[in-house]
Image (cartoon, rainbow, N blue to C red; front, side, top):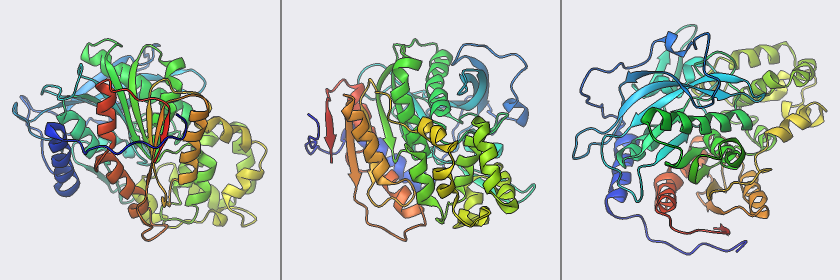
Length: 445
């Protein structure tokens, strides 16, 4: 029933609950556990791994190449250290339908599946890592963090070690996509609803292809922040783009669903420079908008956007903290205000908005009421839009009080830890979907 509140539930118990608790302790607190494997595995793929061959398959989700890799963090099982990881390159499609190569990390668990039903595939949409090639999540899976010094000091942390470790230890096969243009040639189209959804769904196809399993394999999607927007977009595009996939459920945590609302929120915040990621991605796909933005930005603005196109999120915090985009324009108005006024921007931002299609499988949306980075209102609007279309949606509000507003880490990442791994968490929700536990209609809490 629309608007129904969900009943209280017990915290996940048994082996799965212990695994989640152990994963949080190991990965979030200590952050060190190195996989032991039967044979030496490369710590990281060489740079030429990320250069696609001249000819790639036309079919989306086709595996182009793989290379073994080590993992920084996993959890031990009775069989030893679970999971053998590979760098993977696979095919996906751009916004215009053309085929392109994208990379990611594939983790094939060695232990048994501890949940109900057949072993599932889990595709993780990473949170914001940046726009430079060195920011690709797959480059940090072996070390936990990528550090470079040329042309200037830069770092990029792997935010998906906890989630990949939990799902791997539970016995799922896991694929973490790098998204379009991260590591591979071309601009990373940050928060592009269409291309992120393609990369996630084609990641599922590629993982199943690599594992030698069919599309009937149960699939769940996991993502927070940029990743939440990516999995939300994938959930609503799956019935049309990848109808053969057996999608059972999705977590869209703190989803980037309405780019316009987010650009306005983070202007002047600690990660205000991430606005450059979004603007650069839009300009790459909308030439008319590129010309319009070029008219309203000053030289410092154009230089900053160019520099941010090769920056990681850590660089944004250290080199461009609390960036106000009013400093980048000719008239001193913020870029978000210009985007509201530029006629060329409206259709682009509307096309990037998640919520105009209907997911066929259940979705859990979580959002922090005091999130200072990805606004609560646009996440709730996504739930309302989907519910009005007849989708099955569970919406949970995180009531963590505001802590140092504008600094992102406590108010944005705090709800991620609580909603992803705390009591009544997103893993519980997805395990219930894999177990076939019924859920219908819309609930709000």
